[in-house]
Image (tube, rainbow, N blue to C red):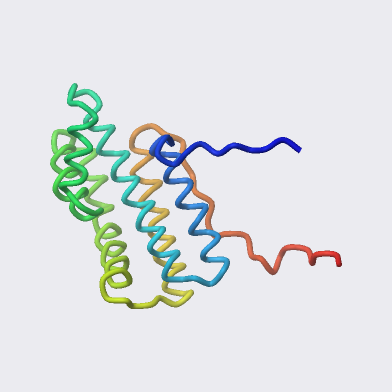
Length: 167
């Protein structure tokens, strides 16, 4: 059987990184690690914001190093969305309206992530599933604005639906 060599994470594209996070959160959800799954969903959402911001900067001629420094400065999905993305899309009424519709999702995902990471709170299956569904809506909405046919699988297949292992 041939050995599968994975591309190092740092060399993956923005969309590949989003899919990697999504795959991980699906596994965490299946293992009933609700809070960890929410953090991964928030990470995937932040990566989608990075993707959108980089797309907006593509035509400016600014170096990727400078754009990366702006992403670090904005610090988190809320900062990236409000300090970078919304100002960048102001020139397009259609994009501004579309992104403003996603703002509620950004705020909720950010609040839930911060409650887990900074306050040590836990989430239930119901909470996690709802937050992950919001993250999916946000991610797909942002990525599709840039012409990508992008879909994330959700809900994950139920482990109880898998056939029993033969012993």
